[in-house]
Length: 457
Ligand code: ARG
Image (spheres, rainbow, N blue to C red):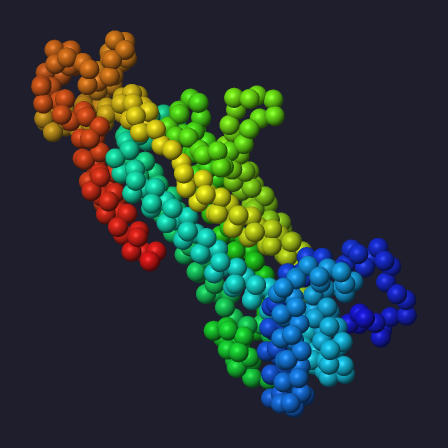
């Protein structure tokens, strides 16, 4: 039975019903809708719509329903109710008869759906935060095992200065830490309960909305009924947090794809997260990483869709808002799956330490060291930069690394260079010198790892 119909003399066209119904996707809000309904039934006792005994009966029926739904949420899809709110109400009426018909007193689907989606978002935030923590701990673990893995660091995808693989891992740890805190911020802001706002102007029943908010696990009740039923900021904010994090995961995936390529051959992704080609027997493709990179586009698309959908809407509720759900469901599911996959990829990654080290030795990534060496001997940095540039050109012409030049060859460019230059040109020296906070020196990286461990405990 539809929730409305008294005002209508004609039945809905089946094609319109299919177009309009949201049960197909909002069935995922069943638990939240039932929790919200239990909360509302209690509020209705305080305004004498239900007696305490009636409320108990309604609550028991709703809890029963909740259990059925928990075991088999898809069974909801068998029904042709308009949306999850109608579905829950009709099931309640099946169970408790006329009593169930009182539940919607003073409530609207507008405040109801606003509540349900917020409850869902809160739960989802917690589970996404766990997934982030899991990936972070995998990064820490991988960093710990690769503190001595030297590899080239890049700018412009040109070998720039040597870094350690551990330092690379910890860079992504930091990005994820910000993603985590963005979720925490979003949670704090959305933690207000819209129920009791009615359709738009507030409910005509003098329920204690602060008490209701507490009962439903919120910090407080929303302050303005018009805003309560039309606010979708939390959806936009979560989609934005998801998009930013997906950009991080996409860059992570891209780095790994490059490192795993035949050209770099810095590491090998495990058979567990790669796939073969149907034609070329030799191939092992980094599909997990490519899909993470690819799915970023789709999550960003959901953010864009939501912003554009809400942009021109007059206050308060409009049916356009029903379009929030598929986007947020898909985006958060996708984000979660990518976080999990990003962690799995790290699980048995095989880093080729010799390869990364050899690559770091090439590409003149110790040129900055030579410039600093000259500075230490009194040459102004701008001059030393130029001198080293010339030395690099010379070394390239001889197909040698800087540390392979003889002292007399160095002297062509600056006579302050002597035997002690070789010590500073070693990879270890390059790393050790970057010992200011946040730098790549092994000691700093070890500290960063220790800090990170403490942070996510
Ligand atoms: N299915 C609707 C949605 O998701 C529920 C709210 C319906 N409200 C209404 N006034 N028709 O937005």
